[in-house]
Image (cartoon, rainbow, N blue to C red; front, side):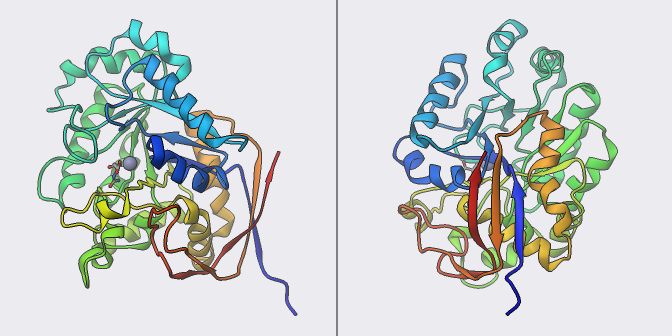
Length: 341
Ligand code: NCD
Ligand code: ZN
């Protein structure tokens, strides 16, 4: 009998993750710590993580929830234009990046930025450039839902030009316009989720409405997905994997007024392996799930070796009550073994 093909990944990193807090943190933490060496932790709690004390306290709560699992939480701060160099210098060692949300654009982003006036943002962004703190951005305007990200590209370009030493990470990109912007500015980078590599708007709303595939930014057109696939599959050096796994309670998803967010962390590596194999690009998966992030962020992840095998895996109906993408469906790869160290 031919042996089952195995795929080995070293130190996978998730460069955009919502771990939440309290009971939800307990419910979802294992989905990340089991297979990832570390993750960039989003700060959109209520209230958002916006002081040194809050960063330290949140990291401690995550650490308690993870127990003895080997996993690094790369913490972020919720961007406010009022941050100055003294404030940021004092907490530099506690964070890996700062996350900017346009006000009210997604879950818990009410305290974000309105208007993108370069001079208003200059003190904070100059300080971040000097302290070498990357800026992660949720890039959507409040325009028509399918155009929000493409409309935001001019803001990305304005920031990239005004702050050439600032590393700007276009988070969870979904459009060909964002992919094109990567090539135009040296200091623009991007994360790509697994769900945006699999689905288009058709999967969300083309048949019966699928609340568990609804997220911000919403999945776009096939040609946008193709553009994302191209740079992901070739592991373009400016893109990295960031799941944007964003759990919500089942009642908040299966509700009229569905919360935005797709929960993928426990199945992300299996799906990526399936995708890269299908496109004959497995040799680039390591760079996409770890190497590029290490280069872009300058992080050195904890050793963790994840072995996947080509054996069907039935995605559970829920993980501690949180419904994942592809619940109850079969995917092609399973986790065979995880070795720490
Ligand atoms: C995220 C969440 O729920 O926190 N939701 C989402 O649809 N992706 C926030 C975000 O990253 O936009
Ligand atoms: Zn997110």
